[in-house]
Length: 147
Image 1 (spheres, rainbow, N blue to C red):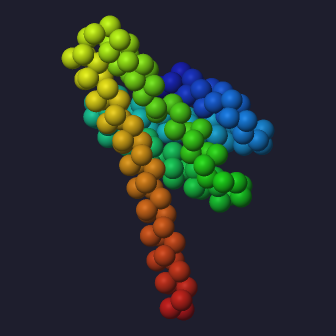
Image 2 (image 1 turned 180 degrees about the vertical axis):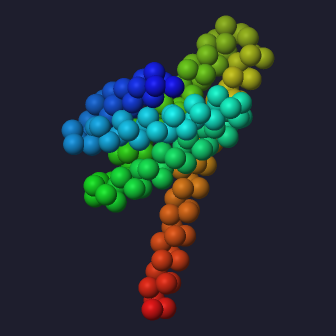
């Protein structure tokens, strides 16, 4: 588990360098990516469906990104994009394309469908977190208006 967390931290950190994220946010982005991957990996160990594990990993990344954005007064997208990187099924998409090229369409279609579902679960995790954030802000505003 520690090795998985460390490598996901390094992976997120390296993509931050590629994306030219400010130096002050590099470590924080690595932490966000690491925590998202730890949630995914812990759920995978317990035999939970990879789509659900990816959904909860992306949800965790989005929640932590919102918290970091508020704490450090930085756009949320800096943390969420870097944090999502370990969850992206890039290797699976590559394998799907490789099988398409080698005319193994049955395997390619299966891999592409799985990559598509995992990508969709990442999007749903981010959207679900944002919806909850908007709802909590609106209910917080109503409480302030009533007082």
